[in-house]
Amino acid sequence: MNRAQLEGFMVPRVGVTVDIHPRDLPIALIGTAGGTFALWADAPAKIVIPTALLIVFNLRIRRWRRRT
Image 1: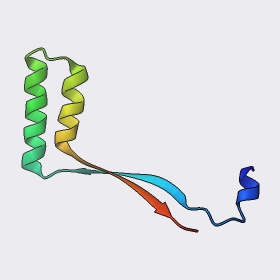
Image 2: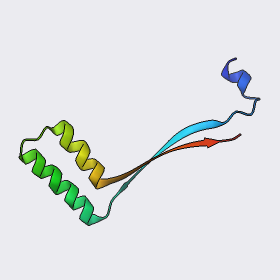
Image 3: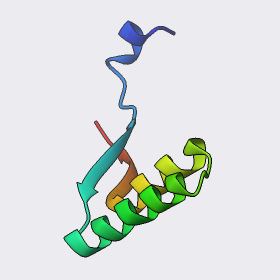
């Protein structure tokens, strides 16, 4: 069955929502300072940058299902 044939049926729709919000200023400063210090101490950038971004930003990933 192709998608055009499924249009008439009641199938749930599944999706993912990713919300990215900056955190409050003190936490953002701590994340930035920690990332800068780690780079200054010759830590690998592959580890430092994603970790600092996770501290600075509030990431929320939600799966949802909508019924049609």
